[in-house]
Length: 348
Image (cartoon, rainbow, N blue to C red; front, top):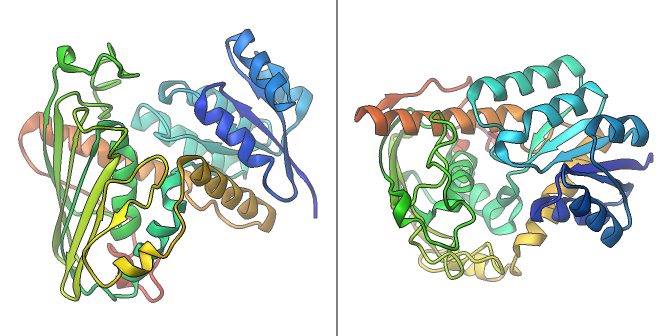
């Protein structure tokens, strides 16, 4: 089997995890890292034994990678993704995929034109506990959902929005409220000083609170998400609960050391407790290896660019609902709205 060459654009924490994950994959090795700051790129390259570049074009021309991970900031994804696809590379882009809907649409269209795969690294889908929960929902073993409720630190907003789609598919309607005050941002926040939206089309990190209510159809049920920068991040990334006709499921306080959280109520809790903890770095190992395997086997990406775009559109609808004070009806893509509506649980 051919060995794939991987390169990483970006020099932050996510870029480092991508690089480490590629080198754990069978039939794949990372050869290069690229960043706008020469000292950071060179330091990461030396640490992990890969060549360092400051020009994306030069890296692509010299290295000719098969796969490129784009792990820059959200509003700096567009050009690296387009350049990499244009060079014939498959691309795994960090989330949120882009900073505007139009840019995201352009990235998806470029992938289709190039005949290459565009994936989005929603790595929390790869957590074994979340996989098991989705299987149980899709198999109907939790019954028909009645209420799903999630609370989280604001940094996890985009992740839990994607998990909502992963568990249940796309909602039919959303309403929302957002409260933000720059002066109340925690002083240690990595997002301190940035506006709460960047730009106004997408929700980023609200300082005080954001809440959205989703109505699903087929079956008809309600889901809520609530987020604040005041949630103690170190102790609780998120918690969620699902109440269905066959019983409840509660999961409390996921942490960086154990993204599966602490299962509480319900018949599924014992099976979840039996799973080994999955840490934040391990979730990257899993999601990157799944992307590499898909490329090697000629399968679609586990989380395709179209999924990343759908999550962006849902996020934009939340912002619109909060701005107008009215619920927003959503146009769902073709197919079942809920995993359990299709035999075997159709994937979103």
